[in-house]
Image (cartoon, rainbow, N blue to C red; front, top):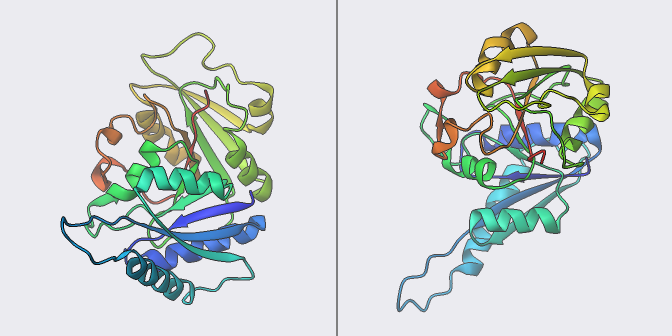
Length: 265
């Protein structure tokens, strides 16, 4: 893992989140790109150009956050971009060869009942970029135990597991897998390939309506430092993602980081 992207919004948690991202990056020797994306909505007949003003203010805002953290020798690069959120994020990740986006749940939302705000929710839901969602105020610590929850272990995308492999290898983590049989189960869904088999310490099987319900049933006995799930059309957040915003009352596992892998197929 060489390059990490950290989108920064206006939340009160932005500085501590950025510190986590830097601490996490240091473990891998990775560089951190601290970014903000702004969009300009022009009013008909307006002649004032505000792009350069917004860019300057955005850079000042980001630099003020970076000045408040301990960079710990990590290369931290500040950048601003103009454009629509999802398309711009995808282009930026491709241009900068990003391995992982580190997200705070509420980039801009101020409502305490919200777990995943609109901006972060869009990035997780509408892109296929690996993302690490870090709880508010969460302090960096080595990842000792990982719980990987999935309803199908069929892997056709060779790179899909790379973020998980990097984290497991770096921290020498114990990786337990929870295989959840849902109504969409197919023969062969629980057949692990050689790469995944070599990574796994323990296997647990569960039968539930959704992967999410399977996790709720088993995560306490695993006591993981990291929950890992897979981005799918009918995946972990299927019901929750009907809206980009997820409330804390609908997501009871909001106290640990969640690694969202890109689609396995």
